[in-house]
Each structure stands twice: as C-alpha cells, then as structure tokens.
Image (tube, rainbow, N blue to C red; front, side, top):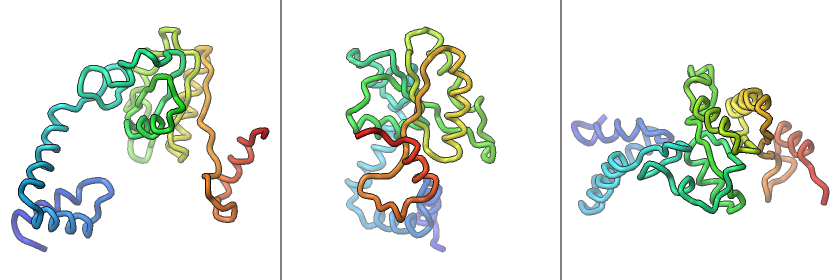
Length: 197
C-alpha cells in the first residue's frame, strides 16, 4: 500500500503476534511522527533485549545471567516445582505472591496440529531435574485449553511412576463473573473443584 521504508515497517510489525494489519499501520505511523529520541530508545531496547536476555540454564525462564532471579533466590523451596508453558506464566504466578517454590518452563505445549510434540518441549530437562529426588510435588500449571490439558496429562503419566505427588491448578469461575455467562466446561470444573467453607 505504501512505498519503501514505511511499508517495510508495517510488514515487520504485522509479523508480531497479536498485531494485525490495522494495528501495524497505526504503530508505524506513530513511530513516524514520534520524537527521534523516543524511537531511538525503542530501537535501543529491542537491541538490548536480543543481546542480553537468554534462558535460565536451570528452569528456562528469561534471565540476563546463567540463572534467573527465582533460581538464585535461596529462600525458595526445592521441594515444589511448578511447570508452566512460557516465561510470561511465571510472571503471572509470581504476581499472586502465593508460590515459594521453583519453576520449570516447557517452552510451549503439546500441539500435534502445529507439529509440536513432547520432544519439542523441555520435558527431558524436567525429568532430569525430577531425577535428583529433591522434588516432592509437581504442580502442573499449563493453560486450561486442549493443548495445556494434553501436556498436563502427558506429564502426569510420565511423573507418577517416580513417586512424586502431581497436582493441577484448580480452574473454575472467575471472581466477579456471572454464572449465566460461564461455559459448561468451566462450570463443570467449578463443581468438581468445590471446597468446604
């Protein structure tokens, strides 16, 4: 639609997840009209993240050194390991302030339609960590969708023979939600996971 550099920018922005053609165009024109110092700061942040950020050698969370801040924290327990799909899931759990164990980031979920099987995830590394005998409970915190459920089921089958307690995050109704808008699966899980008050 446009020529040269602006179209190249729109095309590159459009490759980002969650950015459609209209959003890419809006962002490109915002960059075009932005102060050069702001654009340079953005470009510098992009370069810096590619140069400095890597994956933790222990849990595969994002880090700027060999280990992430969670793995370096000596106050955390090694007896509970929480398995998540992506580093952003670690941030979501950390925001609750409820979990004091360690993490393991799989790097995705089993998805045969996308060609992602168990060998494409960090399951081998997880089993090596569990083989030390330190972990007493494995919390499966994969997404509550088809891929996340398949991954959790696969991991549970692999880990149960090791004698480690395997638990799954509860799922059900969100706070502030209305029953009439809940789908059948969510409502069913809310009934299954009910607790005494």
